[in-house]
Each structure stands twice: as structure tokens, then as C-alpha cells.
Length: 173
Image (cartoon, rainbow, N blue to C red; front, side, top):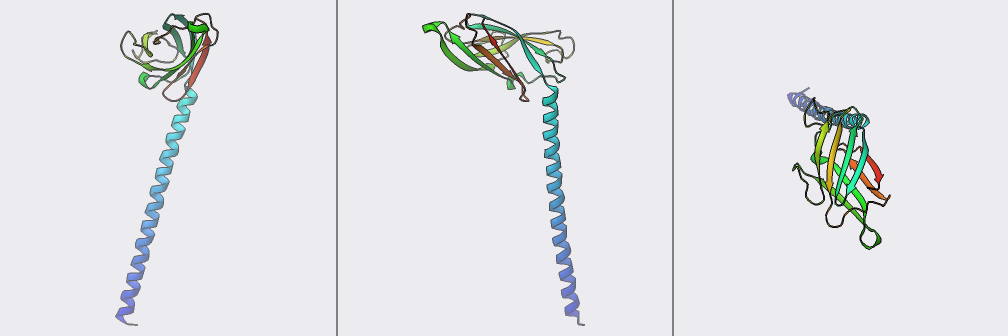
């Protein structure tokens, strides 16, 4: 056997080892990425299972709506700007005109048109400013233009947390 055959065999074995290393490294990287993604999905689903909110009292006075929201779950809620509020209400104009609006969060103490703000969290002794389990949060919503028709039982409010858990309630005013 000549030296050329031995060199060719060594080069072929080296190429096979390099190719195997690339394939194994790629497979391990894909497995790691998939495992991380699955863990994130499970963590998100676990947080959703632990999150529960409930709308208590809703009172409407013209263009201002006050809502009591209870955290009945086991997760803290802190990203208020990522919460969604959808309001479906009737105005007293023209026998009841339907309006559907997404209400945005504001940190200002007095909300502008189509905004909501937190007027208080009670009791807020632990983690001030964070909506902890077993606390109640009072929010104020201000709608633009026409006021809410207070004698309509078809007014409806939905509030959704940052992780996608929602609650809704019909109200008359």
C-alpha cells in the first residue's frame, strides 16, 4: 500500500469526522432551541393558568366609568400599559347609538378621552403599585364624545391582562 492511499484514507476519515461533527452540533443546537421554546411556552401557559381577574362593580356617570377589578388568581400584574380594555356601549343619542372602542392605559391621574387609569389598589401594603393576588384595583375610564347610556343593559366591558387572560361583564350604569 502506497503513501498516497494512506493519505487519501486519512483525508476521507477526517472529512467524515468533520461532517459528523457538523451534523451532531447542528442537531444539538436544534434540540436546545426547541427545548428552550417549549419551556417558554409552558411557562406562559403556567402563568395563564395562575392568572385570574374578575370585574366587580361598574358605575357609569356620563362619559366616566368606574370599575372595580379583583385579582383572584396567584400572579402579580404589573405591566398595565400592556393590558387591553374594550368597551361596547350605547349612547343616549338617537335612541341608542352603538360604540365599540379600545381604551388605552395612561399613567396620568385624570384620563383623557378613550383612556383608563388606576385610581387605587386596595390593600396595597405589599408591592405598592403592583396588582397582587387578593387585591382590588379601581380604574377610571373616560370615553370621548357621547356619554354612556345608563339605562341600557347591553353595555359591555372586557379587560385583558398582559398574558392574555380576560374577564368581561355587562353593565347598565
